[in-house]
Image (cartoon, rainbow, N blue to C red):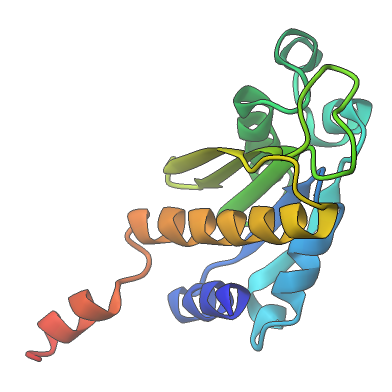
Length: 173
């Protein structure tokens, strides 16, 4: 449902999205691809599961990963920037975290997720979630929902889309 809403808003605004994923391992792009109109809005994505992939593929500075860990707000932000630098997307969504069954090697607990959404206009929305030690499928679902909601908010903040109430007000309802 959230994927369809985001894709519909992107298509109506004539905008495109691309994603960078770590803990979701492609599930975010997969979710978006199932929405009607995805062929007009979804450019694609980067699955950068290992820290080295974030550096090599997305251009995340190695110092960020070293100083903050791959599961951090600065890395999520840099992942979104890497998407915008490497694609023609208007909106980038990045997600990194621990949604598997155990903490990562840097001590980040299961359920910690960082999400960043960025637009070409420089609008950014970031979210740090501490979901707790739920089963991996529950964590993944929660992370995807938050990522889609964060992206929708960034799209709205960009001024490219209007809420229903804003549209209704303009047409006199």
